[in-house]
Image (cartoon, rainbow, N blue to C red; front, side, top):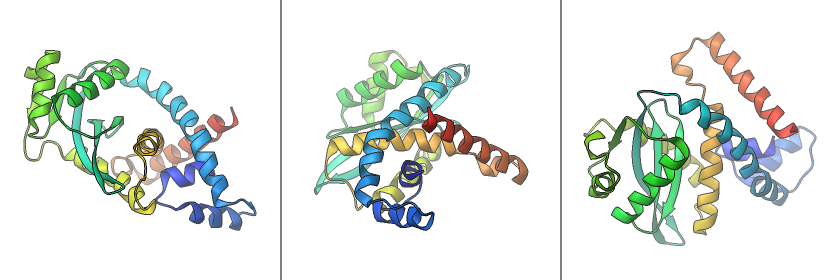
Length: 217
């Protein structure tokens, strides 16, 4: 429960401590920090393992690629993110540059885990085109002003978490957190605007039951 609260919602460590106190659970905020660092990657790996095999079955898979600016101790870094056409966060990758070499490494890492996409939707950054040319998929790239809104909107949950955590102090911590956050977000993303209220409640309950089973294992 502590790991889910901290990663899923824009809460601070002390917010989680207070919420658990109301449930009769007395722990320190440092315990919450230890738990998410220790168990968060394990839970995320199990979620990712189950979902990767399901997503590979798409025959018309469309990826949205984008990068956002993230400051770490006042220094600018770049968070590369790949999202599919249903809003699933596929990969998150933190770098200090955003040139062709980095874009190529990001694409190869994503394709190694998730296979190849039918269409790559990107912004106008030339690094994407250069990297796709090396891979041999430049003909599958699509760019446009509004085409990449799926990726732009997917940044919002991360930005809310970033503000709650008062930003990040180390590149390694950022990479670790975004990997866990992406998997947990995918698990509880019920797409409520696509379902009736009754179906949404069933999907939400099923996701929570699956999370509890994952933690019990």
